[in-house]
Length: 459
Image (cartoon, rainbow, N blue to C red; front, top):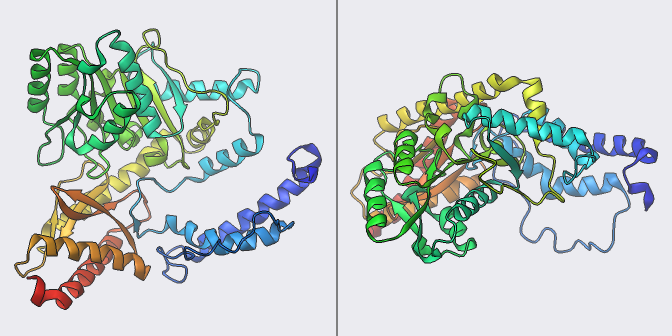
């Protein structure tokens, strides 16, 4: 079995095996480039497809294993790049980043010491410094790559918890907008703080944190002898793409001596934008920042980092042993495409969302929640007939499921005010206004079909 180990003696086997795998992926990508021929966006094997596969009995053949993989995975997975797959908060990957992924996987170098190899640590250090410079954190900034946005947020709030010192944990409070509540609640539990430690702050009509409400909550916290541990501002909420008013929040954090963490997992693509960088004004005043390059820098999953303003005042760290050299993917992207190339792609999808919003606003069949700041549209179908709210919920749920089952497109769902909405997460520059128009028509057709079958009983 040593013939399967990757080393100098198996270099040719490595080349031929990887080439064969790349050829399979290439063929699937080309087959589904802009058509809806099988396999379609929602296609894939049934739930019992792997039940009869005995993992104790290998195939002993790379071609046979790839044939099997093609049936089980590739035919559906490659259509994550389909321009009408609008459900996922991660972007298609750019080729230089995929090349970096292939290199780092093959070399498989750890990042636990500077001598294995030194170049990896140097590259990661430069990418972190570059990101900190783009944010504007200053010369004392530091950062580290993590396994994902949730881990980055957790590490940032752990630092805020350490900064709180020996204050009674029962008195600590974390403030976050109601549009970004669940993830912060999970992190608070991991830190040994209960749900009562997380204070939800009201949002405005565009789902941005209301600074007046935050000021009142901080004032009430001080009046009740509680300790404001951190404010989590969001630069790109999952369901709305909304960006909290960062300058005003930073001012309040300074006034109340409170750690400011900015979750820019989604909105970090604006750091490379030539036209929309101003939407992140105020982020430079954060104590810590989360970035997910795989969301808006067009990197393969996963590629995330947490950055801090002051390396001397924190104990920033990650489990170095086993940590991947994910910085290589972004390094290759920057060296081939440049920051402007990344930013221009992200600007494209943000512009597309604005055009989609205008379509929704002009169409009486749809109710849209907020004007997008990034590339998310949250909306729902509203029938012309007067219907019970629960019936409208069911019609939208049905439309989403029917659309997926048809294989014509994939959209996400969101709950807003207890009601069911649909969501476009537009992160593929290949998606067009015509794609959005076509998917909206499909949604309306499915919803109307449901209401037509249930009209007498429902409305």
